[in-house]
Amino acid sequence: QVQPGDICIDATMGNGNDTLLLCSLCQETGHVYAFDIQEQALAHTRQRLLNADVPTNYTLLLESHANMDHYVQPDSVSCIVFNLGYLPGSGHKERTTMRVTTMPAVEAALDLLDSDGILLVAVYPGHEEGRLEGEMLDAYFRTLDRRKICVTRIEIINSPTSPFFFVCEKK
Image (tube, rainbow, N blue to C red):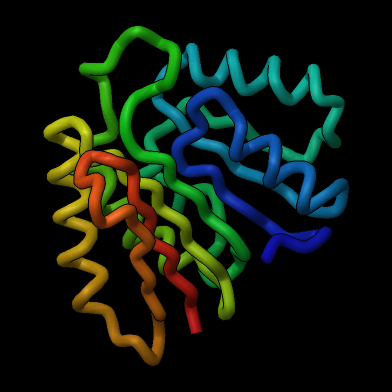
């Protein structure tokens, strides 16, 4: 999906794994915007990118993903990824993404996507807020006009607490 020169967003920077992949894929001529509200996430991601020697084609923002539309133009992004939940390895499992910011962030993400752009959302229902985020997003995505946004849900159906994924393609 991601081509050299594309603009991408990592809406939940975490430890920078998705940011690194997106930077590698869009190469020197593209750009990646990565968001997180935790300084630890920003520091881990910055170090990961420096160690990987990727192009300096990124902007790391200590900012809520709910405000991504303040930084990127509508209809300009080829790929946006959300990895909901808590910062892996932080030891702070009580600090998670929340429905109150996830919903406006996902709505903004759909507006930012270019035609044929992809939104990927990883949901972790193994904790209460994650379960509720998943239910909220499932209900929301079901209301979208399939001629404008095609949404697929990928899950392990015999493991209810395993992560599942939404893949949204803008037409």
